[in-house]
Image 1: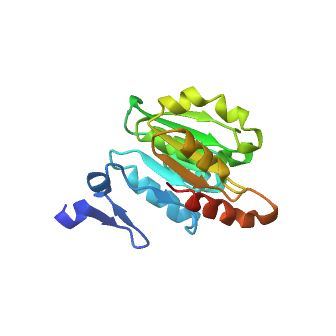
Image 2: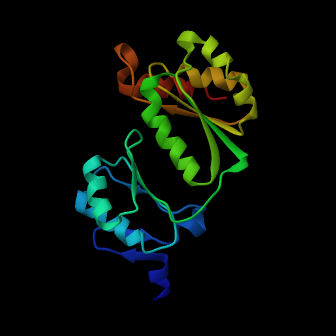
Length: 201
């Protein structure tokens, strides 16, 4: 194998980045949208020859069915639309605690994608769903968990207010994750995105 081959592998329609783990600390993820089912299956099969976990995002059930024929150990998380192949054992680090929160139940698919990705990378993850500002007492009841977490990921649609409120309650990084959930003037997630950008501290 040449030095160039060690860095990436040519498949014609894709180049598998073997060097991503060394550069970034985690392997390359496969973004499934825009790819054909056959391309995704071939990419995952090729990556499965290596030693690292495989994560394929925005995957449909049809995509998973094709992948599973070539990689039987692959698993599918329908809510998050993730395909995962576990090849490395990474027990959760109790000192790397990520709390994933949602404003509403409809935000769960986006939040679950973030949660499962963080777990695959060896983080301890806990989930708190449906604690939006429309019933803010639900959020205050989670203050102990928010205090314990190292990082908080907040997924919210509509006007995205939850991220701003959480940011005002804690002294740690808050990752604001806008979703396209909402109606009226939510503009398919644009209102949430702008609200979160305007509330950055």
